[in-house]
Image (cartoon, rainbow, N blue to C red; front, side, top):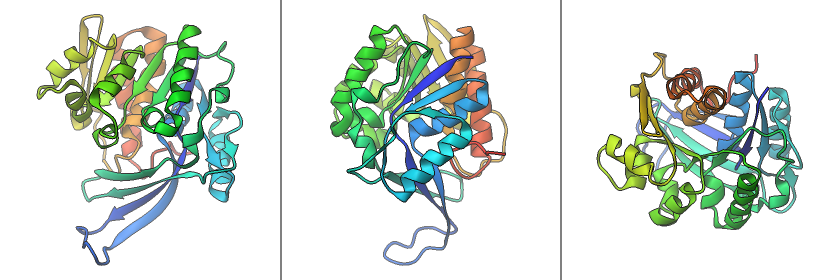
Length: 293
């Protein structure tokens, strides 16, 4: 059984499903719930639903939320070492979900900012690595994560990078993000992020341009499915029809479906389809994690 190492973040998601447009400066009716989250942690939990093992490198604070999040990882069977540290509180993401299921996020990285190279587990049994962009975009963890990338590459393990949202990427220059992309074996991003990084207005042109930086480019197209290119070969698959309730975690579940299948088959169409199938399961329920039952 293959094992994927997920590097980045774990957090508490506080989700507010809006029942009406926001009344700025006043009350707005909503349904609020809390769920385990964090991009890398979400990917790690979804990976366990693909007959693949996962190991998470992230950090929680030494607080009740941290204890709860670690307990949740254990229920999924996600492997981890020394997640809990004192110093900063556990990360929290506040998420507003509108009537169409679209989400707007307000992340606070919390303890994840303190990642160190020593947090890496032994790499001998690791088959591939998923890297969350939040870990590089946070200047406090950037140097340590770049050192992790160097160590992973020295071990000959492929790295698949999700640079996160355009809003988050604008913290640094586009050129700096692209310099990170050159270190990766593949990049997974949505159409808005692809257009932004490539500085293009056409998604197919953006896809091809990004191959100048990394050999594998996968672009998620939401309700239109997903597309990808590797070694000049392209593929596109439709989305799996489902009732969209909450898009939180859609990209994370897609990555969890895509990466194991790609490592297993090197078949772009099969891997894209596996990603789309897992994403459809995610958006059909509230929260970014698979159901435990």
